[in-house]
Amino acid sequence: MSRYITLGADRDGEVYGLEVNDDGTLRRNPLGCSTSCAVIRPVTKANYEYMTEDPESVEDLWKAAVAAGETQKGLDDWFKDIDAEELIDKSFVYELLEDDDNPTVKAWSSAQPVESEVDFRDHVSDTLINSARVEGVESEDDVYEWESSGWFPPREPFAVEFAPKAVLDEYYAHLRETYKEFKG
View 1: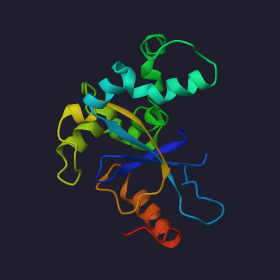
View 2: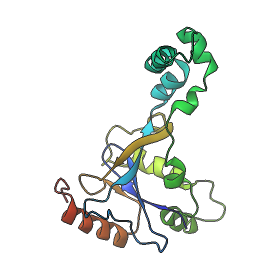
View 3: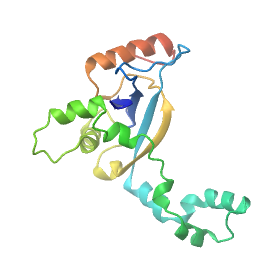
View 4: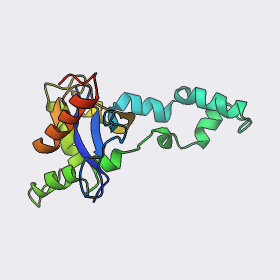
């Protein structure tokens, strides 16, 4: 069983996933605080190209490397030596969009025709692009890649829901009890 279940996406297109226990129940913060999610966000094609092709995108990292004595190279030479794609934090992307053991991915995949060429990752991207409730995600260029956004709870019910209604209802009820900023 996967350690995560994909719940839904907010109005900005950020996708939330919640850690689950070995028995499949939602993992709750033992202190009684709100249950935070692993959150990933879409990266536009323009931002992806900037982060992976333009040395200025990593100038602060280069300065830190120079200050630490890790390099004496100039920015352009240092940028050529690094794998800029590895600088994009892809934490939780696999778990939330591709892991066949993720209950949401598994349920969606099993409902698709065998000959379907669309995977869950494509389904999420297409859903965000075509949802009137998601702002700023209008084309494939707006969901060119995914990166980690952080670890936090949603402030309102998801604009797009991916998990089963019963799971979402349980999670929303928990947030209402534990997270004063939840508006739902």
